[in-house]
Amino acid sequence: MIGAGQAGLAMSRCLAERSIDHVLLERGEVANSWKTERWDSLRLLTPNWQSRLPGFGYEGDDPDGYRTMPETVDFLDRYARVISAPVYTNTTVTSVRTADAGYMVATDLGDWRCPTIVLATGACNIARIPAVAEAMPSGLATLTSMQYRNSDQLEDGGVLVVGASATGTQLADEIHRSGRPVTLAVGEHVRAPRVYRGRDIEWWMDAAGVLDERYDEVDDIVRARRVPSLQLAGSRERATLDLNALTGIGVKLVGRLAGVNGGKAQFSGSLRNQCAMSDLKMNRLLDTIDEWAAENGLDGEVAAPHRLAPTEVEDSPPLGMDLAAGAVKTILWATGYRPDFSWLDVPVLDRKGQVRHDGGVVDSPGMYLMGMQFLRRRKSALMDGVGDDARDLSAHLASYLDGRVTPGAAPG
Image (tube, rainbow, N blue to C red; front, side, top):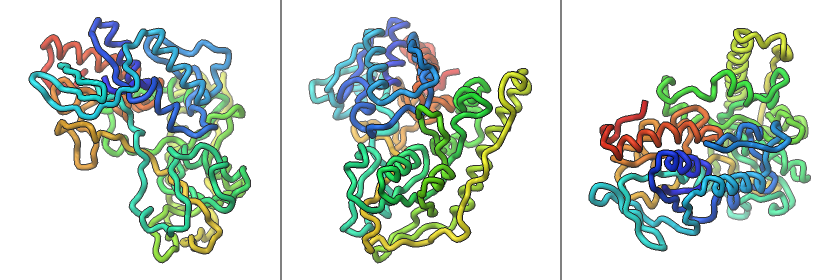
């Protein structure tokens, strides 16, 4: 198993329950990404009660709170100890290739041979930076959300935050409150209230089965795996952090960053349409929740249905900005992440560098994938989702070792 974050640890527990010998190879420490690649103030987007891993869960007195990064690391460290996960830390995998009836895994501390292998390195290894970044004026400071720790890193002056999903909205809020004027370039995004009808939106999606929707139940799984994360933030106040909240404190909204020419940024004119589509998707989700609540007799126990006001967009959003004029000092890329499989020397990657798989069963005998967006369920990338995926895939792996499944056949 490569990776000792929540996905790798969940799979480790499930393999141990089946008495399957295994090791986890981790380039850093347990929960390395949470320790080294997140900003200081970040909290989980899911409430504490939703951190449910195989044989382990939240035991504190704040189930509706949201873990800080140190608390998240401590949670995963404790899980690794409780399940006695056989983790080899500070062990960097340099290549994986086929060998005999299995795989050869080369690391900086030696080689491993194995009949089966689980790729659990996650989806957020490398910041995804659009090609337009190459045209930015040389005088501007640029950094990614993986490099950002707090606003003290930034020069005084304006900041252009590119990307308006969960990461972009949270960083725009934090940076603007530090006294730096922020412009937020908005592309596709999914709006959601933090609390709906008195309960966390994640509670509703969990209870109504939205998060359990399977990959083979959607019409376009490729598209579903590219849907941005909900515009949510974990805070003590359980506040909704959407575009209206940002404009309310003075953040300036512009359309998607479409290009840079001669030091001038060019923004798409689709801002209003993007926001209208986001509002539509949110209200469809709330309709689903309302229908489920009515069907299950909850209408008398929770607050009445309501809808957020539509996203406010000015009549004529700016279509350009002179980045060389001096008002903007920093560009912050909050444009998502991509996995790093540069060490994978097995022909299983598609033209976009993604592993070809069917619900986590990779297109190579005995190889499995964990921890990716909508791997097997809509919740697969959440800490709460890796357990169910691990149960399914560990069962498939056990059957593969016993010769009871055809290589490459998906689990039921």
